[in-house]
Every structure is written in C-alpha cells, then in structure tokens.
Amino acid sequence: MRLTIDRDRCEGYGLCADSAPELMHLDDDGELVLDHEDVPAPSSAAAETAVRVCPVAALRAD
Amino acid sequence: MVRQRVVVVGASIAGVTVVDELRRRGFTGELTLVGDDPHPAYNRPALSKGFLSGTDTLASITLPALSCEVDQRIGATAIGLDTDRREVLLADGDRLPFGRLVIATGARARTMTDLGAADPGAEESTFRDVADARDLRDRLVDRPRVVIVGAGILGMELASTCAAAGSAVTVVDRQPPLRAQLGRFLSDLVVEAATAHGVTLAHHPAGVRLRGSGTPAAELADGRRFDGDLVISAVGCRPDVEWLAGSGLVTDGDLRIDDRCRVAAGILAAGDVAAFPGDHGHRRTPWWTSALDQARTAAATLLDDDAGAPLVPSPYFWTEQFGITLRVCGPLPVRGRPTVVAGSPAEGLLLTWPDGRDGATAAAVNRRIPISRLRALTRATPSDPPMEARR
Ligand SMILES: Cc1cc2nc3c(=O)[nH]c(=O)nc-3n(C[C@H](O)[C@H](O)[C@H](O)COP(=O)(O)OP(=O)(O)OC[C@H]3O[C@@H](n4cnc5c(N)ncnc54)[C@H](O)[C@@H]3O)c2cc1C
Ligand code: SF4
Image (cartoon, rainbow over all chains, first blue to last red; front, side):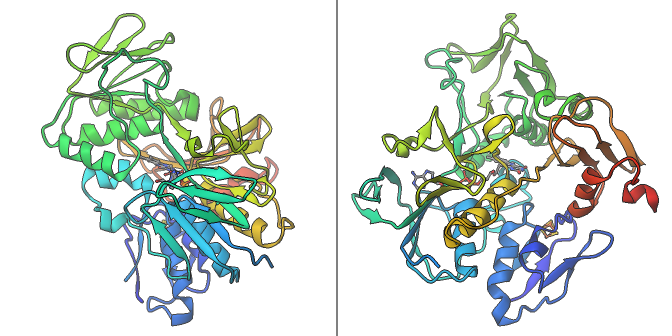
C-alpha cells in the first residue's frame, strides 16, 4: 500500500497523524510529512484509518 | 474485555469509525455493521464543496473500505429496536440480536414542509447525500436561478458553489447570514465576500415561506418574493431516530447521550444522531470532528465496560466559501471584536477572542496553521502571549 498526499488540498488538520503517528507527522510549519509512503504491512489498517478521518479527503492509500 | 455481539447501525463516518476503533483496540467478538446507504461510506462535507463543483468524484471522496473482520449489511435498513429482547429489526424481516448496540444513524435534511413553512405543493429540494448532490450538479449545467432558504453554513456553501457555476443565487433567511452560527465579525467577512460574488442576500425576522403556485419561490414575511428555477432548503438537519420509535430512548426528539456516549445500559450512540450534554443542556453537534470524537469514545466506553475516560469536546469547525477558508477552535458564535494575533486581510488572519462566555475562541481566516497551534491559542492567557506573537 502506498500513501499519497494532495498538497493543495491538505489543510494541516493533523487528524490523520493522530490516527497513524507511526506513518506521518506534522512538521513545525504544520505541513504533513509522510514518514512511510510505502506502508509496512502491519500498519495498513492505521493507514486506512488516517485516510478515512481526513476531513478534506487529501490523503489517499492505493 | 466485552465479548458479546456488537451491532452498529449507520455506516457513515461515525459507524465506520466505531467498527474500526473496536477492532484496533483488540475487540475479537462478533461485529455487525448495518447501513441503508447503497454507496460505501464517503466524505459527506465534500458534497457541497469539491463534489458539487466538479473537482471531486464519488471515487475520490469514498472512504477506504474496512479491512477488518466485520459482517457488513450494506443496503439494510433498521426499522425498529426491541430493547427487551435486545434485537434490531431490519426492513427485510431479519432480527439482529446484540449484546451491545451503537446507534450512528446520523441525520437527514429538515425541510420547510417539516417546519410548517411551505404551502401545499411547494417545490423544494434538499442537500444531504450523494444522490442530492448529483441532482444539483446536473441541474447547475443549465445555470438555473437558485433560491436557497437558510443562510447557515450549508446554505452559504451551496450558494458559493452555485454562484461559481454561473447561477444567479439568492439566499433568504429569518436572520442575517451566518450571524447566529459565527457571530457578527466572522459573518460580516463572509457576507462581504458573498456580496462581491454577486449573491443576493435577504432576511426578515418574521421568517420565510415557500409558495406553492407558479414558479418555485420563497417569500419573506414582508412580501418580498424570490422566484427561482429551483428552491433548495438548507434549514438544518434532524436526527434519524424514527426507527427508534417506541424504544423509550428518544426524549423530545433527541437521542441523549452522556459524556461517555451512553444512551442506556449496553446502548451507545455517536455522531449527528446524538445529543451531547453541555452547559446549556443536550445539543447535537453535527460536525465531522465531533462524529469522530464520539465514535472513538463510544468504542472505548463499550470495551472498557464504561470505565473509559469521558469525552471533553474541543469544538473545531471549518468551512470554505466565496474564496474564504475559515477554521475555528473553541465555542461559536463569538461576540465582539477579536484580537489580531498575526497577519492581515491580504495574507490571512489569525484571530482570538480571549474572553468568550464558554472559553476562548481562535480563528484562522485564509491562513494555514496546524490545528494544534490554533487550539493552543485558545489556551493562552494574556500574560502568556500566543506563540505566533512571540516568534
Ligand atoms: C453537504 C454537507 C456539508 C457538510 N460540511 C461539513 C463541514 O464542512 N464541516 C463539518 O465539520 N461537517 C460538515 N458536515 C457534517 C458532517 O458531514 C456530519 O457531521 C457527518 O457526516 C456525521 O456523520 P454520521 O456518521 O454521524 O452521520 P451521517 O453521515 O448522516 O451518516 C448516517 C448514516 O446512517 C445511515 N442510516 C440512517 N438511518 C438508518 C437506518 N434506519 N438503518 C440503517 N442505516 C441508516 C444513513 O444512510 C447514513 O449513511 C456537512 C454535512 C453535509 C450534509
Ligand atoms: S487530516 Fe487531511 S488535511 Fe489534515 S493533515 Fe492529514 S491529510 Fe492533511
């Protein structure tokens, strides 16, 4: 599974990072940083949760 | 840990999050998710924004499917709840016994007809689900004249998208646009932008009525009549609790929960359907982040046998309309003028109202700031200058 972020859309809500802190975090400027674009198998459920909770549908898992 | 069968009714963001959270917290018992929407769950807020404007498709706003073990009854409607036998009744005649039940049936659009403010035969449409959004998107191609009743968040977002699609748009209400929701300062910002985008705004304190003869029309109490090719009612939503009739769980139309999302023994609720306790009584908080917060709390309460931590809501709100992206932490509406923490109207503003009746509020207008920092501004005291100002 691969995570992608739509930068134009991401508003830095950080709800995704709350759900999957092992995969992503917000940097000091509030930009989302994907620490693992290729999601390790044990974290795939967390990745799906992160995608789901994003209020502006900016994060995708394919 | 609880092992009884858990049934969750309502398969949108609240219901799906309850299921996901239960499994992520290690629940291994039987789990059933019932949802009457034929579509897999999608991001509802996007309907009035990107989906209506055409930048999004149903595929791009569909939420990831649950990959955990769950018996999903998609397209199944719950029509009753038997609290004695502890069974959910489905429209197809099936009965689902449960040990624990989570109610997440959300809300549906309220109509002017519901409010007794429409003549017999008056035409009105509403906007709540993907079918409504598709209908409107298809109609906007012909640039119809659009009359929107209700100048709240949804009504104004629809006005923004319809105006951008080239329609002549009028929004009518009993109150000035967004005043009751946001307070004067923020609503004035939006009204200015809406007016600049050519939207006609009209209100009268004695209200609006939909007319039943001739072209679809809304009429203010002072006789001003607005004809449209279509009239859209955006006058709030009501909780989807009809299926709970006779269960004894609904009080004055509200499904009341406590701060651990409990309705009754072994029965919980989360999301738009639920009324949460606060200083001013039980109120529904029909927003995305409260649906998430409540869903997670309900899952924790259910598993920890009611010993989990209570939910302390930290209100968070956002909207996009007429070129303004507004994000707010803390209670709304806000009274009085804000303190400008940073920025200017041109580069985006960071504002606080430190002394609100229910606590401080912070808002970002066309300015990116992580929500954690926006929230921190609601906690800063005057002797402890906000982070932005210190930098
Ligand atoms: C157009 C629009 C724009 C919005 N914009 C924003 C925004 O910008 N910001 C924000 O914070 N919030 C916004 N919201 C609110 C947000 O979408 C809701 O708070 C959120 O969807 C609530 O989720 P929920 O799961 O509680 O309820 P819902 O999303 O309403 O889902 C309830 C589900 O239960 C199903 N159901 C109902 N009854 C039954 C039954 N008897 N049997 C089986 N299934 C049933 C329904 O079909 C539905 O799928 C918006 C809402 C709309 C309509
Ligand atoms: S939740 Fe969405 S908007 Fe927020 S940081 Fe994550 S991807 Fe960006």
